[in-house]
Amino acid sequence: MLLGACDEAKPRITGPAPGDGFRAPAVAGLDGKVYGWPQGRPLLVNFWATWCRPCRAEMPALDRLYRESRARGLEVLAVSVDADLQLVREFILQTGVTFPILFDREGAATRQTLAIAAFPTTLLVARDGVVSEIVVGAREWDRGPARAAVDALL
Image 1 (cartoon, rainbow, N blue to C red):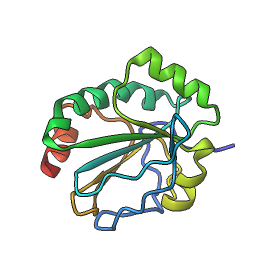
Image 2: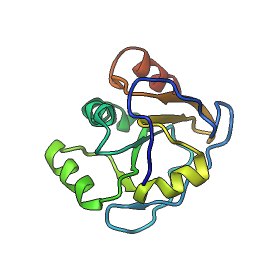
Image 3: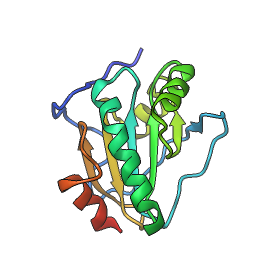
Image 4: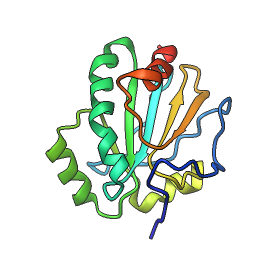
């Protein structure tokens, strides 16, 4: 079972660092198909789980950000590290989240490719594929400093 931090604490990150190229893990959508990662567009990738209270709390702000910024080129993807796909589907139905959700059962690819173990963790990736920022913990993505960081990518 995957155990990871699920709060505002700042655990040590051993995966990518700002300035590194983004190495996308091979994960599938909720339909089971593996999709290619967007390239040449600014990207926000959120790693989360349904069992993580801060993860669930930030989803509405991520969705508002997505709805407001996708016309300007922003791609928002969320990678669930849950063990149960049905829980993820139920969460999406309950919340009405509209951005793409990928499913990495128990975080296998996430841990192996990116060494992410704290949730939520969000990577901001510039158009050139370079990680510009790594944020551990929940944020109000549609306002304040978090929104400013995203807008800087656009």
